[in-house]
Length: 75
Image (cartoon, rainbow, N blue to C red; front, side, top):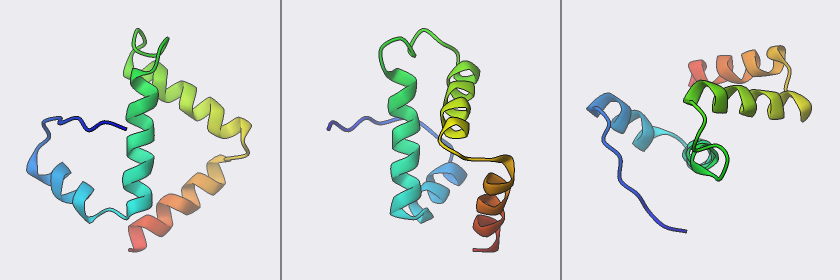
């Protein structure tokens, strides 16, 4: 693995630093997917749609996602 640096505002920096290691890893995975071969020519919207499609194929339903997001808001 290699490390990169990207510029973000202070709010994003703080949120990332306060996130759980699991959430930080998930964000890293999303960034890796975005820059992988064949994805680097796609827009962020296209990449996110592809990630969504993959998640749905793996059983993530809108209801499960809503529950996950609700749990995160309660933290």
